[in-house]
Length: 210
Image 1 (tube, rainbow, N blue to C red):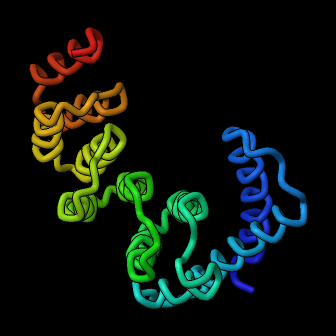
Image 2: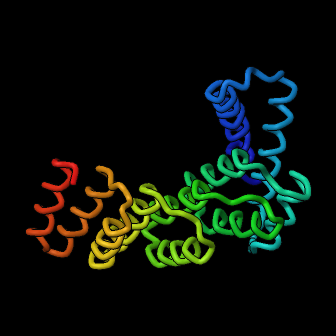
């Protein structure tokens, strides 16, 4: 089957991640049978998603519903699926998963949007990143530092340095705390646009935490 080796590796990764999540939240260790069953469900969904030739949000939603039940995957399961798709640079499929989750009324939070935004940044899809940012605003999803950093990075990598700097300015005015990653993306954007004075300004702001 297509991606058989990849999906086998995914099952191992899912099992390890599931252990980590349980231990971090102090929920105790679940039985291996439960963990294995959970991992198998996630791997099945992963395989079926990868096998789709022309996925659409509604179709992906049906797959999620079929594997995980009427309410679709829970928050952590969805996060793991999206993270794996992002690592495979399958931002297209990750976007359909987010859309599919909404179609089955599964909860979609800022973390899921951030994973998708990061996928866009990895592939320099700045237009899709801006579109996702607009969707978050429309759905009143509160963006955070990660959202802003990934969006700015997507614009910077896509050669849209002016847009990246505009986003940085909007972010600062929105009182979102900026991190080193955000400033580095802004400095890189300035360098590409030949805005060396602004680059020095952002470097100073990063050093002094302003």
